[in-house]
Amino acid sequence: MALAESTIVDEIEATLRSYPWLDCELHTLRHGGLAVVGGVALHRAPPLTPDVVLYFADVFLVSALRTWSTDTDHRVLTRHDGAEAIPLGLPFRVDQGYSIYRLQPEDLDGACWIAARSLRMKQMRRPEEPLSLPPGWSGGGGWQAT
Image 1 (cartoon, rainbow, N blue to C red):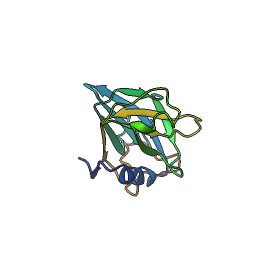
Image 2 (tube, one colour; image 1 turned 30 degrees about the horizontal axis):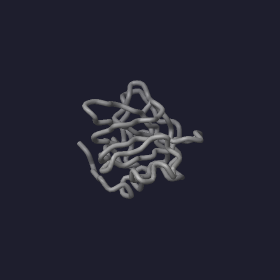
Image 3 (tube, rainbow, N blue to C red; image 1 turned 90 degrees about the horizontal axis):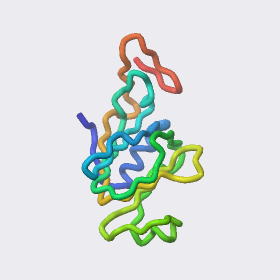
Image 4 (cartoon, one colour; image 1 turned 45 degrees about the vertical axis):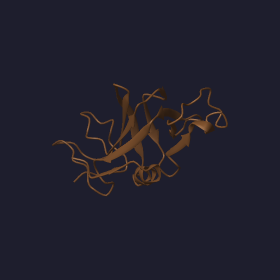
């Protein structure tokens, strides 16, 4: 069950930056939709429920790493209209009605680019809530489980 849902890029950006960091992963690309999951403990084994899920609808281009970490002290997500593709130095055009979304990985000179008709986010865990780890697991990497 999602705690919050938003389609406004500035609200999504504020939510993403409320976490101390986010490990991100291209999760599912199916029927033109892309799900990108993010969380502070996303790459634990066994995997935990992500903190946020970004849903891109009617995707026609993805240029991204499969997994990456994001420094939330800096801007994580921006949205650009198709007219901005050339000034951004992107080697492709974007159809009218679509947007270019830029996700900025940490320690990467480039960015992850997703061209899609729309974006929505579901927040699955607020940053101040403790993680629910399986029995016997303990926190690490800057967060602690209770």
